[in-house]
View (cartoon, rainbow, N blue to C red):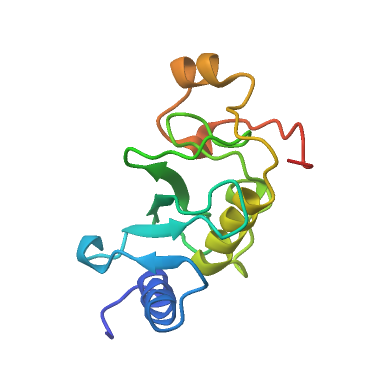
Length: 154
């Protein structure tokens, strides 16, 4: 433990609390957590009474050594990427706390809750209007995208 960097210590603490007391519908895929804690896979279930009820999604969190001062890179992965106005078909998520509104006070748990809430409040399953162009032209790292948050109501 003592040889851990501050970033690794923080990640270790978050991981333990997420495994012990996960938010509803959230589970950590502990088999797939790298030795250095830099990549986590987290399963998230669609809530009852929402458009995504009964569906299961997987998020990939990538952390660099500046975490928590720098936000994690978070994308949906796997063969079920939610069809949502803020989720691109390549798994990139347009959510301000993942970029400009990130704060070190936020955590993996709060990001999972924000994403679950974003899915739960969705009224219509559809891709973002610029999905095709974005997926063709975007950087592999969604944090390099200059997001333009056009509609907070969906």
